Image (cartoon, rainbow, N blue to C red; front, side, top):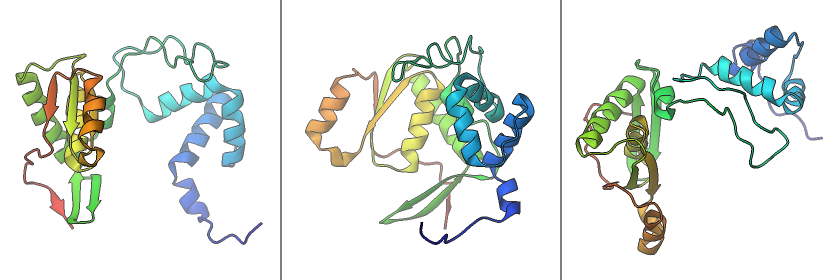
Length: 204
């Protein structure tokens, strides 16, 4: 085995999310895990208990809870997870609305851009309102022809927040690749590669 190059301090370990989760599992299931290997071994042998703990630890927002964690833990792939639950992906990602940093974008030919949770929520809300005004609703397909930029994240969250299905293609896919992908889903709305920003983003 090679020489260990770095090891986190005990304080750093105890301040990590995985350590807090391990303590959560220990308290709930009367375990005594002290390292990742022990937690991992338990997780693959107690699948429903592990994922129920994950659901509660991260605080999933759901309009309806699940009936059970998994329908058949021996059917991989093909198992159904958390059947009965109803939740919105975007609602969970946008639960924070403060000034902490939500996104950091770095591009080869662009300045570094930082967006706070409050700014992200504001942009998503305004774009979702515009989508609704265009008649987009739950179950509709929305596609974006745009590069991997903050606007793509905003558009995805806006579509998802109103129950629409999101798909995207980068311009470097080529016309045939884009038509092949988008042609399969009969989109109700398409977004251009440039979405006007609010002008309140931070650059570094």
